[in-house]
Amino acid sequence: MKKIKLFFLMALTVSMANAQTTFDLDWFVGISNANASITIEPGDTVRWTWTDEVPHSVTSDSGSQESFDSGILTGAGSQFSYTFTQVGVNPYECDVHSSMEGTITVDNVASIADKFRMNISFYPNPVANKLTVASLYKLDSYKIYNILGKLVAQGAADGNITEIDMASLESGMYFINATSGDMQATFKVVKR
Image (cartoon, rainbow, N blue to C red; front, top):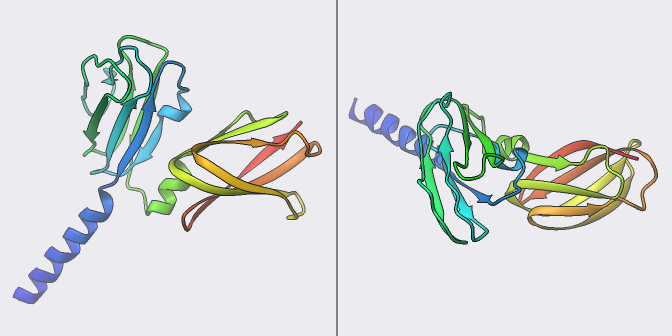
């Protein structure tokens, strides 16, 4: 019986360790809602880092599942962290700049790879020249495939936010495969 209890205790510990991930978000005037919105699991932490010199806060809205407030902090490099414990939706904003807003969605996500796929954003779509790809995970590379599955371009990524020059590609639909370590996400983009 002691072996069974020990096994369950170890399994619970491993499960809890896997669920605890810290996600970094840059927090600055002009950040888009898409880049300030992510999906995480219960037990995960979000760490916001001020990347400009003006004052900001990270404050939950009245309809948020959990209540959090950084207070007003000033200066590049200032940080606020919050660990989310409840499944639900948590809209938030900056009390100083109402255009700075996002949503932290807490859900029982299956794996880190699922988190990667769920937290990658790209814009504009359709794209004329440059496509911006943003991820909570540092991107390593990307590949662009045409509708027939032929590789038409590839390149190294620049970290969490990467600009892809698509100006030389013909108009049509493309599939972009972004990688971060051994994780991959593929998404569809229309080129004008």
